[in-house]
Amino acid sequence: MLPLEGKLVLSIEQAIAAPFCTRQLADLGARVIKIERPEVGDLARGYDKRVDGIASHFVWVNRSKESLAIDLKDPDGLEFIKTILPKVDIFVQNLAFGASKRLGLDYENLKKYNPKIIVCDISGYGEGGNYGHKKAYDLLIQSESGLVSITGTQDECVKVPISIADISAGMYAYSSILQALLYLEKTGKGSRVEISMLECMAEWMNYPLYYTYKNATPPERKGAFHASITPYGPYKAKDGVVMFGLQNPREWESFCKIVLQDESLIEHEDFKNNTLRTKNASKVKEIIEDAFKNLSAKEVVDRLDEAKIANGNVNELNQVWEHPQLKARNRWREVDSEVGKIPALLPPATNNNYEARMDKIPALGEHTESILKEFGFSDKINLFKEKKII
Image 1 (cartoon, rainbow, N blue to C red):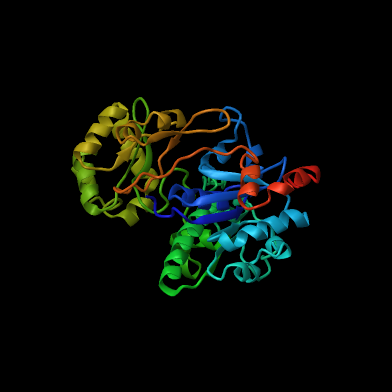
Image 2: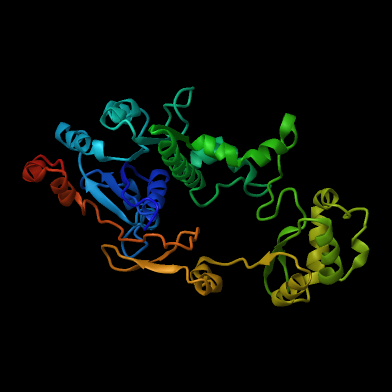
């Protein structure tokens, strides 16, 4: 038995934040009905066609769901949704500002159908303030939160390539819904959970914020190198690049003795502590790469391992598909889709009592008619088709 078996989730969702949240609820056994626009569907369906014709983002965050394609702007379509509401345990939405309220699907209205309902509203900036009404996409939140300003090189700031603002919002929405379920169990009360993408990213930006406390100088943009720990990043060997990092004085001593084979650097006036090494990071890099210039990447890694210095490969994505550790731990499964079987990674949290649910990625509207029949609208299906409600 999975933890959320028997829970019904109704989600008006698109893109990444809300779908990532509800996919994780589905992983734990919840039944997730995903409401999409007829003919068009979730906008993420059209991002690309990289997975045998299905969009890569959509494949990632939409398995184990049922797709209900219905027009909520039509009164009959909206009325059907309201028919379901008394049975809904969790309602999730990441519509544009004010849209859920205009549809009568805000918390104050939803709790009239089910006082114990948990409602999760995900938006870019949260309600109120001068930003509450603004559209928000991942890049814009990365920019507003300061993340872009500290990412990149001295010459250019860059965005994080994955949708990190959406992911953070999806994760906080997921964990907050689990909190609300525990609160319901203890008190018998439903909840409204509000998730702001900006506030999620601001939480994750606390280290650089405190680093600049009282208008201190912000972390320097150093590409793949750490802004405040040295050495920590990619360093060239004879035939490639090795990624490694040090965290404490003991590791610096071991690094100098075993890896660089130069004990004079341990107490050198320019390098004897992390603050000095970071101040003189270019000198440190020069010394390290001079020591590595006649060593293969494997020989460097062997020395790092002997010195117990954390290190890793700079893998390309095709190498991640074949990563030996993922294979050794049997992390790959297959999920069904409208185009056949697709490989998928198990969720990262492993529980000894059960394995996460990993069911089919739904085609647009795949479950519309079966859901209408289930909730007593069999006689309306033809009418809904004629009116293009479904």
